Amino acid sequence: MGALISIPFAGSLGTVATSALAGCAFCFTSKAASLAFKSCNCNSSIATRVGFALIFSLNSLLAWLMKTPWAIEQIKKLTLNYISLCENGKCHGTLAIHRICFALSLFHLILSTSLINVRSTRTRRAEIQNGWWGPKVLAWILLLVISFLIPDGFFIIWGNWVALMGATVFILIGLVLLVDFAHSFTETCLENWENSGSNLWQYILVGSTLGLYVISIALTGLMYAFFAGSGCTLNQFFITFNLVLSVLVTVLSVAPAIQEANPKSGLAQASIVAAYCTYLVLSAVGNHTHATCNPLHKRAAATQTTTVIIGGVFTFVAIAYSTTRAATLSKAFTTGTKKGGDIALSGNDSRELGLSTGPTVITKQPTPKNTPRYQALVAAVEAGAIPASALNDRTLYADGGDSDDEGEEGAVGEERDDEKVAVKYNYSWFHIIFAMAAMYVAMLLTDWQIIKWSAPSGPDDGGSTIYIGRSDVAMWMRIISSWISILLYGWSLLAPVVMPDRFGDWD
Image (cartoon, rainbow, N blue to C red):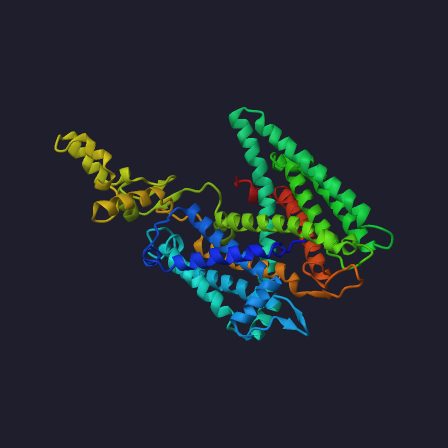
């Protein structure tokens, strides 16, 4: 269910290919060449993350295309049959998917290595993260091409071991972030409710909680009705055990001892975890290979597209959130920095930013008006040496180069640069997260290395079908993930009670 489907209309592939060729042609125009050898000045931390998310989305789409017969034929033609995607007359794009995802993983690992110990955008290496998008895109494309020249044996090892381990770690990080989201969403609603005095946030909190519990109950009922028939003991155990665990964490979240240690915990967080774990169990039983216990096998042609679309949308939304959230919380993963900490500058750094002559603790990004150059202009205006309108000309006090045009461009970049004092997230860890996310996509699209060929069983079945995402391996990955989610959330409730001294100072 978590795998993506092929493009439904083959005719649209021509349009996609035309757009791709047009984009490639643009890369070699004079304007693009200028971008390729000069920073694009895209220094906003949010804009940078959006840029890498777009590259990740394009790479995932390209890997998705490798599951279509059209893509398999095109690769065979382009490589003059050097790359074989067929075995015993059965064709699939498993190794092609691994090649594409390997290229993106290698791309991010190279960037991660080059950005180690970058603390602020004043470090020249920060331009690798926030600028030079032309060279980065070209490097990514080059790695894609090179990946198709590597022998198949390498990717068999890569897929069976490296990508498997990276995807597993990514799942664990995603589960931790899910629990974090459950707590942060509830705390945000409560804080906005208390600060604004509006009942809107109360309705959002209560409505989402009730809605998620209704969804969990409805999904559980559907699973009992369609996946837990006579003889389906394993499915019955999965569904019942998840129901018991969901009830357990719900009761635990409102226990007096838990409420005393963390008054903001409650049913809202428990409903998010319960709904997500119920979805994982539904996805797991839907991947069960037992024909009698999985009704999706009986009407594969009619149901495969719908279930995979729903699972694909849910999965890639989760991936997008996990990578972005991991970037914003990277310091917690790497250094354990507490929330709300201030930044202490040394005397030299303070004088450079025009703040003071000694060590300074700052809580916000300095602006160009904090600089000695601007203060000198103010003094000149007060002395009557220059008109007051000079203070409105940012090119006189903002860093930006020698010429007027460059000064204006630099002022805009200075205004967008929200990481001059300190980076918002760990650049190196950010790319490690994306590398593991690419490994997870590869394992997801290749069904964790389990691909089953189903020959037509009757005249009405049409052609043969390759089932991606329907195996015992995929089933157990989802079941174990649901159990770990419950375990992590339960520990987040119990930890402040068991170790109050350690968690008492945290926000």
